[in-house]
Structures are given as structure tokens and as C-alpha cells.
Amino acid sequence: MTTIPRDQWYVAAYGREIGHDLFSRTICGESILFWRTEAGQLTAMSDRCVHRRFPLSQAPSRLVGDSVVCGYHGFTYGADGACVAVPGQTRVPRTARLRSYPVVEQDSFVWVWIGDPARADATRIPRAPWLVSPDYTTVSGMEPLAARFGLLVDNLLDLSHETYLHGGYIGTPEVASTPITTEVDEAAGIVYVSRHMDDAECPPFYATSTGLTGRIARWQDIEYTPPCLYKLHSRIAPVGSLPNPDGTDPDAFHVEVVYAITPETEHSTHDFWAVARDFALDDTSVSDFIAEQNRTVVLQDVAALDVLEQVIATEPAGYQELSINIDTGGLAARRMLAAMLRQEPATAAAR
Ligand code: FES
Ligand SMILES: [Fe+2]
Image 1 (spheres, protein in one colour):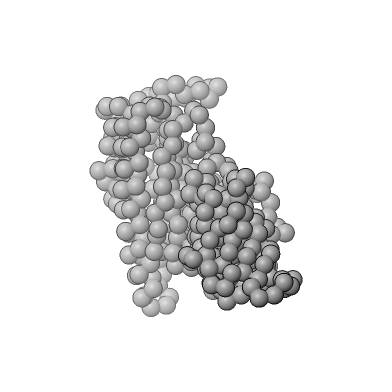
Image 2 (cartoon, protein in one colour):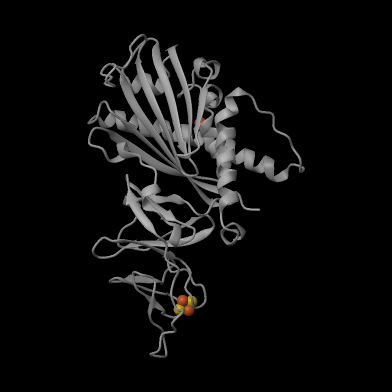
């Protein structure tokens, strides 16, 4: 039984990863070939030749102008996925066409629609405007996770694990000890989880990047739009400092931590992470520090979740988890993901 909703937009790559050459990534179990035309237009199509399945991303397959030539027997495809030439005959079979995928480049991400193209509505793609805003500086990366995407959803919706798994980086005692509030906007399809620590230790991640010393106000406001986009609005300020009534917040440092959670297969995930800040915009030492620290934190999660995937794979059926208050956001996310799966047409869910 699949756990992956297919009639959804997923982040397949950063825009910078795809140029005028052949790039392949597996999304929701499908091998997809991405490339840009000579004019820069993004394309996404099946990475399997319709003839004998040879991967079109695999040498000696190659891009010639705006055509892909299969490296096995030479079937040639245009940017729309239609086959334009086959060897040994002039007639190209009418059905010789690669499946093409709706694709949108937005907020530095390449989003791809895996389900029925007729239902692809680009206006429903959630936004992360900080990642391309001149008012922010962003560092980003992607780590492969050998675990199902639901484990990463659980992990990100409950940040109390920072205290234990990420001590010395972003974890301090107050994260685990401060209660959360959880809200679900069913109509918009968003889970919100907030934790406001008004007098907390400043973890090294923020002490070094902001220069704040002593104790801080640290707010964590999570906004998760299942299945793919997770945003953590992080506010760090001197103790006692509050935003102004008009929303301005000059004494605080703001960090937008964005994750795109993209299933590669039922049991592996692309863990895209980006950290945008509104301070020290031109300071490359701050950028390097945040990038190195955040990658380390992501790899701590990856190591833990890879272990969990193995535990789940070998446990007897019927294991019962025990949930507490900190799990409210994760459980809400699970319910939304389950509802998405139920609402999918049987053909999509059965694949
Ligand atoms: S497998 Fe691609 S041309 Fe034969
Ligand atoms: Fe974590």
C-alpha cells in the first residue's frame, strides 16, 4: 500500500541543478529526466526510452540541440517528449512519446506534478518567497534520506527533538520543556505548530550567526503544507523585545528555515533544506557557518531516521506507538496526508 499522495506538487530540484544537459531524479518512484532547452525552458519527461527502456540520462544518450537521442538505438525526442525520429524507418509510430510532467520553477525550486496532468494547478504550489528575496540571504542543500518521507514529516513537526538530537547546535533545554500550540487550517491545508520561548539559552547556531550574547527570546512558528513544503519561521531577539503592533520587528533576527520533503521511493526521500536570514546579508562567513551547521543538523536527523526506517522494516506487525502532547502537529499532518490519499482517484492510488 502506497503512502505517497500522487496528485500533488513536489520539489524535484533546485533550479540551479538543471541546465542544458540531461539530469535525472527519481520522484515518487518515477525516474524523471529534466533539462533546459537552448532558450532556457525547463522540461520534465520520463527517463525511460519508449523502445527498450534505456535511461535517456545514461551515456551515450545525449542532448543534441533541443532533442534527446537515446544512447541505445537512437530514438530521438523533442522538448515536448514526442519522438521525432527512429532508426531504420521514416514512419515514427504515433504512440512514440515520452510521458511529460507539468513543471514550474518558483522560489528557487523546480516543482513537478506527478499525478494526472489535468489536475495540475500551479496556483496551488505553496510559496517560500524569502529564498529569492533581495532582503534575505539564503544557503541551501539537499541530503538523501534512506527512510520514508513520513518519518521526516514527524521529525520536522516536533522540534522538541532538537534538545536531544541536536544539542550543541540548535538544541537547548527550553525547546523540549516549552509547550506547543497546534492549529489546523483544513480549508487551506496547513498545519501550524508554535513554540514561543521568552527566556531561553541561545544555542551556538544563533549565538555565532547573530552575535547575540546572553539569554534570548526564541520563537518557532511552523507552517507545514502537506505533503511537500515545510516552513519554520524562527525569531531570535533579546529577552523582552516584542514585534511592534504594525508588524515591524527591528530588534529581532529572522530566519526562515524551509524544507521540501520529496519522496524518492516508498522508503527513501529527498531532504531539501534552505535557511534564509534577514541579517548579515553580505557576510560570507555567516553564510558558511549557517550552511555547515545546518547541514550537520540535517545529517543528524538523516542518521536517526535511517535507523528508524530499518527498525520499522524488521519489526513485527502491530507495533503500537505512544503519542503525547509534542506529537499533536505530527499527528495532524498524518491525518491530512491520509485524507489526501483517500481522496485520490483509485487509478492514481493503485499505481
Ligand atoms: S532503447 Fe532507446 S532507442 Fe532502443
Ligand atoms: Fe532535527
